[in-house]
Length: 161
Image (cartoon, rainbow, N blue to C red; front, side, top):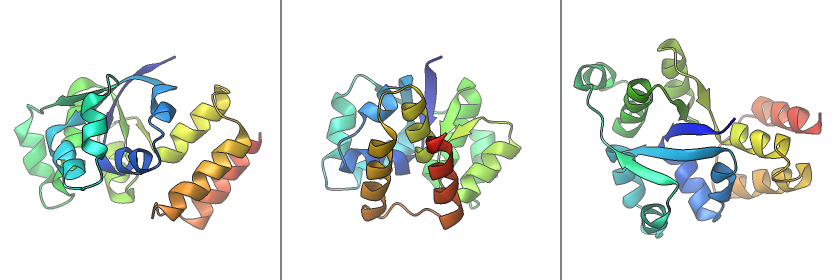
């Protein structure tokens, strides 16, 4: 079942750097990007924001729930906060990798997925092979995607099944 998600900046930046937005497109029909997340992505001088703006998969969307946003102010960065608020407003899955943001999103009742979850979904859909998933993991680690040893081991166990 394909669906719509809201994305924080980390996965957008990493997949943009390695030119692999197809990994999101293989699993989801639409990715909403909060305005503040897009601002964060645009601050990079690597052309990723232009790629996002030109791609039909992505849509920039503003939040309306300022109360919840203010509640998260100072706890998370503004992009993560907007992503959580927008996912809650739209009742969408949230694509987020930062531990603190994931924890808060879960306590707010949101369904979440991270970059490794996107890779797992691609393997399960047979959009990429297990070998390709491991190669992508190695590539994103070289791009400074931080991952705990425990999470990496879990990922490798899951894709081998």
